[in-house]
Image (cartoon, rainbow, N blue to C red; front, side, top):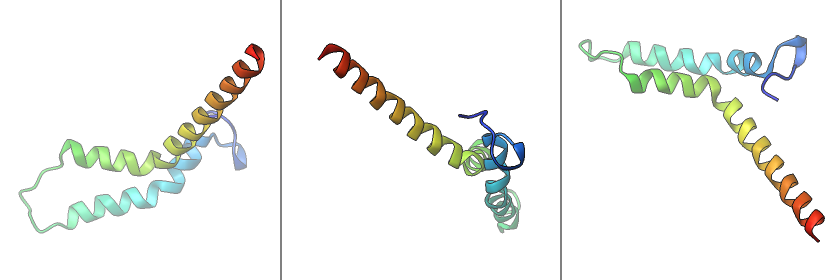
Length: 81
């Protein structure tokens, strides 16, 4: 699923990165405009940008995992029943 192709032959990860990039850039610009000039970029800031870029991918992978688990459960119930 993660390497599956989307429109224009791009993989899902690349597609979501491009789709979510404006949110990440907006977040970085907001950090840059803060009045506290002495403020440095912290790990939490980098993680927030990463979360913004990959948020859609994590949701898709969570849904896919739930679907696979439910299919396995149904298979086991059918096989044991």
